[in-house]
Each structure stands twice: as C-alpha cells, then as structure tokens.
Image 1: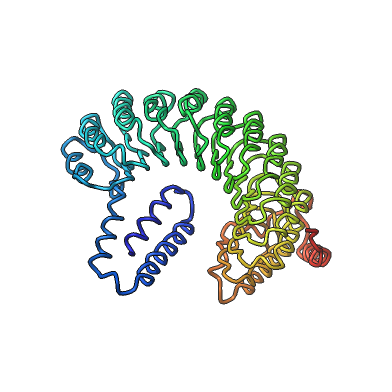
Image 2: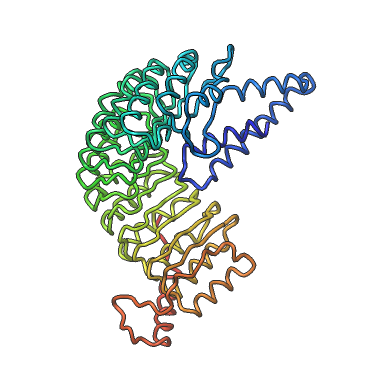
Length: 479
C-alpha cells in the first residue's frame, strides 16, 4: 500500500515540478488512507495473497524508466529496459520515458514494442527524451514515436523539455492530430516560438475535454500568444492554465485575457514573468471576476503597477471564495494600491500562501496587509513580504499577526530596511519558533526610502514608525 501511495504522489509531483511538494504529500496521505480503508471495509474476507495480487495489478499499470541518472539509451539497453512492456497480458496504461535520451536505434527498438500496447495506453510522458541528440536524429526519433503512438486514446500527454520548436511540434503531428480526448497537455521549456505555437493550435483537433494546459518557459511572444489564445478559447473545460515565462507583452496578454473569459471552470492560473502591463492586467480582471472555482493564482512580475493590481484585487474580492494561493510579487505595487489588495485578502479566509515580495509597500502597505490577515485566516502558513522597503513598524506588525496562526510555517521579510532593534523585536516575537522566520541576511538597517533624507536620525525614525503604527493598527478592512 505504501508503494502504491508513493507512486501516485510521485506521478502528481512530476506534473508540478516547480511546486514545493506539499500537494504531493497530500496525495500520498489520501491514497494511503484510501487503500487502508478498503482493507478495513473488506474485513477477513480478503487474505494477504489476494491483497498482494491486487497491489501487483495496480503497480502494473505504470511503466516508468525516468529514475536514476540522465543518460543516453542505445538499442541493447532499450531491449532490456522495455522488455516488461512486451510481456503478454501486461496492463500498462501509463508510460514515462522522461530523463532518458533515445537515439535512432533505441527508438526503432521501442516502436514495435509500443505498437503492441498502444490501444491500452492513456498516459504518455515523453518529456526530456532526446537530450543531447543532433537535430536530425532527434526529429527522426520524434517521428518514430509519433507514428507508432498515432491513434492512442490519451488523456495525458507530456512533451516538455525537448527543445521542439516548430519542427519538433510538426514531427509529433501524427500523434497530436489523432487526439480527441486529451485532458492534460504539457509543452513546457520546448522552444515554442510564434510558429510553433501556431503549429500546436493547428494540429490539435479537439480540446473540448482539456483540463490542464501548460506552456511554461517558452519564447512565445505576443504573436504566439494569439495562437495559444485560440486553443484556450476552444478549451471550455480548462481548470489549470500555465503560460508563465513566455515573453508575452500587452497585446498577447489582452488576447489571453479575452480567451480566458470562456474558461469558467478555471481553478489554477499561472501567468508569471511576462510583460502584460497595466492594460492587460485590467483586461485580465474581467476574466477573473468569473472564476468562482479559482484556488491558486500566480500573477507575479507582470508590470501591473497600482492600477492593474487594484483592478485584479477588486475582481478577486468578488470571486474565488476558496482562494488558497495569491502571488503578486514584483509588480511595482505601492502603498497606494495596497488598500484594494488588503480588502481582497481580508475576504479570503482559506488563504494558505501570500507572496507580495519585491514591491514598494513600505510600512504603510505592510501594516494594511497585516491587518487584513489579522482576523481568522486560520489556514495561512506562508507570507513573503521581502524587498518592500519595510521598516521596524511594518516588520513588527507582520510578525505579531502571523505568529499566532496555527500551523504557520514561514514569514519572509528579508531584504527590507528594518533596524537592528526591529530585527531583535521580530526575533523575540518568534522566540521558541525561529524556524518560522526566514533568513534576514539581506536586510539593510541603514536603508533609506527615496522620500526621506539620508541623515534622518534614529530618534526621528522611531517617532515616525510609532505614529504610523498607531494610525494604522486599528484600521478596519472593508470586506
């Protein structure tokens, strides 16, 4: 049972390589509990032999050679590695060839073996399976796998980390064209350019059942975003969309925002590290206002500024009642834009993680956010307010609020302007639980705000902080 639960959790973790593993741990716990409950419910009717047989059958559905060192595979090794797939009566429905580089000879060995089980496959992971091969050989390998797997009725397909480009996408054309029931498609770190994105949109015939679509870390740009938006428009069942680090600017952001209005069932949205700007941020807020099922939203490094942030915060406040993760780091948010954001945060009682790092909130904004988190928010476990020009008052107020949360794990206030006295206060607040306080090695006690004179003495600074905290500490957030 432990092995089965671990296998299920491991499969989940591989689908979210950038996560911290917490969701995989939850899968592990749920799956192990489910298996144990099954045994308890059956009672003495099930003997150990029958349970072992069932475990063997369940393990036999997943064939995974991704473990171990990343290495080339040639013909002889392929014959030995893939031998279980050729055994009569096997019940493999999922294959993972990731982390192993197939050459032409190995691909020719794999092809006839895969042809014998293609009709039973539902999940195929070919991520990072041609690493280090010359382009011509890599394209031949992709064509071989595409041809032999053509016609599989897949629900899951992962072609990430293969530097596909347009040529690679079209090499998988036969496989892609034959898919009418895909629920999950991963094309991350694939060199998906404008032309490649158009090829993907052209080759996939149906995305009506698509629930997960990931395009992370590609060179898509605005023109490519137009093609991706066409896929999104056709994917009305989409629940998890990731288009982060894809060089998309304002025009592409506007196209994606409009397309996302068709996706009313979205639960997770990740658009981090693009160049949307204010206009695209405001447009995105119109789509987000419809997402009642949204639980995780990643909008960091989008150049939203105060105007875009306020529009999105107002939209989120009236939607996504079960929001768990909110990330808006690196958006040039100032204290001016924090009021709307604080009101949004105050309304999200299921929030577990908040990341507002690398903005310009200062003490005013930090205290507003702390007040928003002050009541309830019992599931909160991580807050990142690093690099926000926060001083002693803001740091102290944040610490006083989060330290009281049951199950809280990490407060990051590094890279701010907190005085040595302020650091001592924060550490005293976390006395006995310093593991909940992130590193402070990049804090600059001598740091100055642009508006303040560098020669301001500590006494005046302390008076400023005391007055500010007095004004803001009892401020109520309008929910």
